Length: 348
Ligand SMILES: C[S@@+](CC[C@H](N)C(=O)[O-])C[C@H]1O[C@@H](n2cnc3c(N)ncnc32)[C@H](O)[C@@H]1O
Image 1 (cartoon, rainbow, N blue to C red):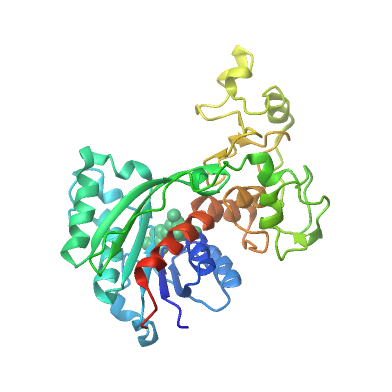
Image 2 (image 1 turned 45 degrees about the vertical axis):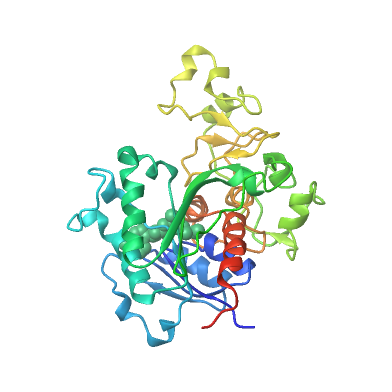
């Protein structure tokens, strides 16, 4: 049976693409302007093409003819241009990236598109930004629905919220799967407790047996560990974080140490018994629930629901950025599986 063909704009390393692939879609092409993320994308989506290009300037007409038959466009364009006026000003250069997503949808007229973004987009300018986005896609022929999705409610061991817009060309109204998709939220320790404190060379065999169902699932097909590089903190940092208990934060520190970092999320430890807070792109503020260091790229990837077979390329900081930027693949898969119910068999 033919698979629905997907174009991933602002693909990064391909977290959302992986979810779509797992649901049975075929990822034709990922476009990004960051080479390291595309190296990861290519090495984990062997059958897909990559294109390193600035989407502010790339026109859909410039893509090769073979990409003409695209069934679904996915991606997460930065939407900064909206924040000032609440209306899209086509002349505002900061709007170019969002506009590029719209123009690709307008050109390819896929059966569906899925656009994700930060959740505060919905409340921006009293909701005008969101209304404007919906109107714009409606004007090019799509019925649009949106939802702020909490990843932990869909089996991802992370309290990460993202707004997702889905547009259907058929005019049907897409209904998002309900939160509470999983009976029990997955905790940070269920996600990473089998990974050691120490750095491991890429390809080192697992040391422990899986300690949870989640670990059994995420290790499937993998016999060794990659991307488990440790961040070397100063002795001072290690001695301060040592004072913070599992799930604690700067409030556990003596008064004179509380302001040693100027961010309110600093000196925070994961809670082993809860889903992780949102994984960022490597700011070194969130520490392991047990060890006196921040999570390694592999631990962060686990928290984002990337399987252990998905290997990240580039330096450690590049890896953390790719992981922190990504849509959790499992969240992508949940959306993609639901979308399949509306798309039926692929005609392209
Ligand atoms: C939020 S990340 C995408 C994450 C991706 N959807 C995933 O699930 O892994 C946004 C991506 O947009 C890319 N990007 C930013 N500006 C761009 C531009 N002008 N042209 C192409 N890509 C751009 C960044 O390099 C980054 O990888």
